[in-house]
Length: 472
Image (cartoon, rainbow, N blue to C red):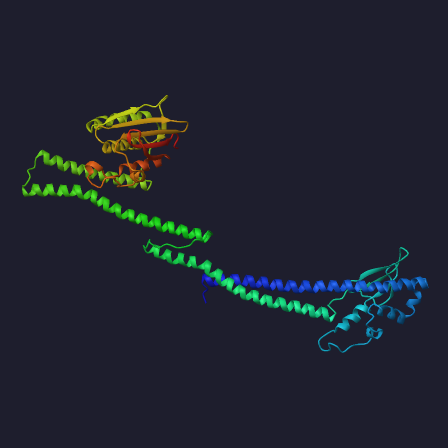
């Protein structure tokens, strides 16, 4: 069966939590057992203090352990005082308690007591059975600051007392119940987080498929601040951008169609009038047809150049050039046109030396001409246009200022969009095609510069262009 993301996450969460609970249970079981064994060992050592004192007294009375080694029964009686509730016979006689289930507590008691041995000061065995394959713990026998011997014993391997065993069983049973409860809670936690994580991913998959099918209206509602939340927000931004581009494309086609329809309609009407003999074929008619064809040709050229600049295929032949001379030539070229429109055109030369930049002279000339054309076309008659050029250490700045009318603040960024014109009329004689400033924006970007629209001290608009001197 193929597992989806939600089930994979659920299994990952549940298996991780279950493994943690099982590990904790095993660690607790082992730690509890070791703790009780250490506790019982400490009790055994404390009880050995009684035998320790008894052996020191025997050594003091007899002067050595020689007599003790000759009387095994006496040694057995001495060891029995460690557990006063046990008889000496319990050390040698078997017991039926726990039969069939392994060693009983008395078996381990007997093993512990029988593991106790007496050694001399050099740790030579005097009484007891040697435990060669087990680790022996040593308790020194000290008399008058001199070591007279050692007691050797093997620490208990299990919890012997019934009360201790019941306590351990109770603790492990309680923790087992807690572990089951934690596992049940883990099921709920794993289900919650698996759904919480997988839901936006599933939504992303569905919305991406819809986006690929052309439905750009899809949005994902996700308020989280994690990586998935950021991914959802990026998807929404992508969908919004694609939707805006689709809307712009539709307007772009409609605007181009409108721009071309008017001159084509005029050409068609004039040609039909000539065919019907309504209008004579004279110089005025030919001049009108020529203007309309020239307008169409200019529109096609602008569209072609804008398309090339958008895809980065517009050719640039950059070299070191005098921006001061280039701007001066453009201003002189437009002086007559501005005068014919009833406008005063003035240029302020830069202070100090001539300004040089690294760029394409043809494209920069096109840039300045488009800026001047924009100001001449949109400035009211009787107004003024000023061109100012200045520089700092790394940047050359060109400002083209004009008088009224100005542009509303919310529309200033839009004037650099293709086919955007502020007036509602689509008359090319007054508004143009709306491609000039869009081309300017691409030319400036190709020179690593910036262009923006600002308020003009003359009451109109200032188009400011900043170009790096070394745009290599």
